[in-house]
Length: 255
Image (cartoon, rainbow, N blue to C red; front, side, top):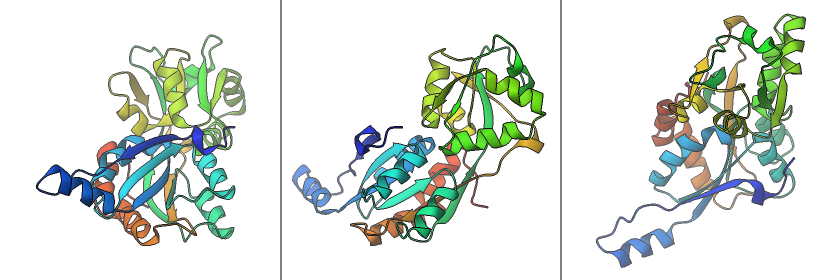
């Protein structure tokens, strides 16, 4: 698994100038502190849309699998905010003294994603001998949610589906990539990722009895360079511009 910080997708998001001319705008932007936010890959579109509007700092976003980002923090990397696609990893970091008290801020829905013209219409269709599937690796939330779901299916059906898995991806965007490239026939992703893919993919709902509870949590990293701005950003995930961006992307409210 990629563990280096360089492996994460980095997006620099400078804020727009507020002054009356270019010099004043540049000076104003330069005076703002930089806030580093490490977030699960499934939040790429939502946080990318709202973070430029964060008034207290210039936000730099680092996206990857929640487990990879947690590993970086354990290795000494100190972003200001850590946001994961589950509650387990933030809770573990908190217990290890590496993260402030986590806050649950959003929910998501696990779905089966297929290309728009696919004949696959249900989870049962994944058992065919000619079907290829991409899922998340066991350590990343999308992978653990998927395995939790498959474990609730009849044993023979679960085994047949797992036998058709051709790729274990380090984050949900890797699964989306395999689907849009035509490398696999189906994959388990979040509904927000299908929304972000536009016309390329369609979502198939899972039977209610096998759906996992997908809850996102975040916290301020201990030793963060900008703890006050980090707390303000964290608050905004619950009630603010970023909370609105998450809802627009298809995320649900915190439980």
